Image 1 (tube, rainbow, N blue to C red):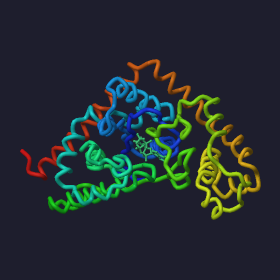
Image 2 (image 1 turned 90 degrees about the vertical axis):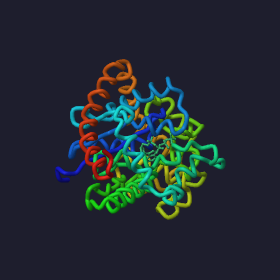
Image 3 (image 1 turned 135 degrees about the vertical axis):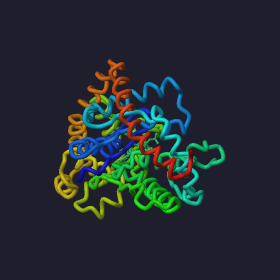
Length: 334
Ligand code: AQP
């Protein structure tokens, strides 16, 4: 990647960071940090689109920073900060609210999923969340955004907003059109209880996900209880696709063992799911338990985590202010 490229991504501090966040986002963040300038944000303004208890939110912001560090992000290489500490995010979001179209937002499937059947009662913030996400990215003129497959639609909207801004204000190429970087092997980790739903922090049952802070015992129990199938493991992907829970377990196994899906299916075909589950739990314990221990250790020194945020916010603010100055000028704001 050339020097002009810039990565931006965010994680909501809504607690319980899980295997989906780890495979879909965090592991990718770390490998990108080695090649390119990266900005990683704890998106607290996104979190409050659904009510958060203030004390829990504060704790979760620090826990998210601890999770960033524990998975290998380095604050000397990447800018790590929290969204609300750089007011440019909210200011640009307002400008983009005026660029984005209601018809575009009405197509966002995540709003439909999260608002549920009673949309009238969802917060306005939840509805315009994708415009804030576009502002997060465009404020830094980021070119690449590592996300899980669930965020693809929001990222396409960010591109549409960037394009419309460039057209409306007659400034071709002012905002780059950000490209998603989605993990090829496992772009969407599914719930351990329902293979058709993504693994999620807000899912009520803790047995639906592997949290980064889970103990070896938790992981063993959750994998043992994970929904699978009564027939032996098939030898081809087509048959597996008809069994979403089984496919999810094999997908996770291939990702955590760093082997491709074909090789994982070869290794497991004809075996009972109990065999896969034992191997999977073992591999997950090796990968996740050390991360969880590191998160807990880092959380013992909260002033250190706050200092990382403060320094990161200073750096982010310099880039944001410089870009905002040009954005205000383009729009005609004095
Ligand atoms: N199940 C998943 N598989 C792959 N990637 C995932 N991500 C989230 N879930 C999965 C990716 O993790 C990054 C951070 O996500 P987020 O926490 O900011 O928001 P989210 O996508 O809304 O995650 P959750 O777990 O579903 O949170 P709640 O339940 O609070 O809404 C993103 O890049 C996301 O794609």
